[in-house]
Image (cartoon, rainbow, N blue to C red; front, side, top):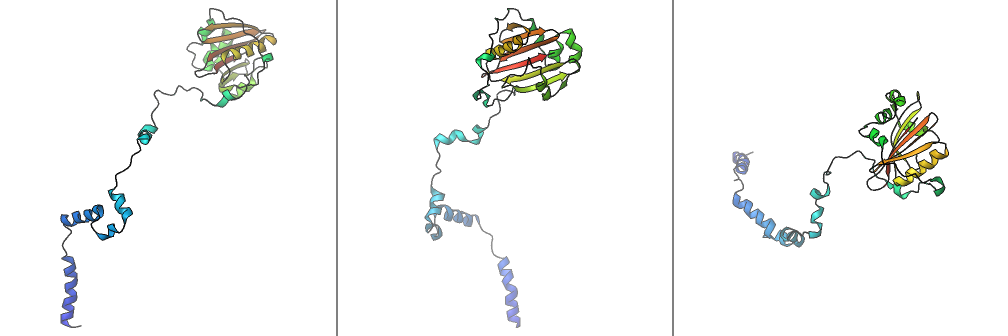
Length: 240
């Protein structure tokens, strides 16, 4: 290789390294090319030019569908109530022959006062009588206790069990459930069941809380019923 050619090859990379960096004027020119269609390349692509120049379209009817408005925190903590379902649309299978009108409630309701402040089923059972107090302290909790109620005081046909407890040592059963049936229908159904089984039933009420209770020999039951917000009835049932 001749000395002259070798010198030319060495000079090429040095010339490339000496290329000046892009100035602000060059960058501004590139922006104009993209946004104003100054170069023929954009003028030959009307879709690109329109996409860059046209105004953004906004539908006023959809402005409230932004993500900031879709999910909101609850206004208050969950009360732990039974979630609503389609139970109200299902017939409970109760016939008019299965009902017996509940006698008018007595003005005083000592059974209501027993239930005030009882936070657990065991505590509710303990307050019933001295006979159940010791037994109620040793209850175990399981939904299976709801299937072991006495035949005379069973679950209402469409009952949705919330919690259940029991103790075989004294035959104690305590069940909390919800029903889509109105409160009056619940009371009339249980009144028919227990009176036909020989129980002496008594009806008490205090505001919206109603109590139906009675005894038959050594057996006893107490039913606490209150209307649910939105329809249906909440029930706590104690049997011994």
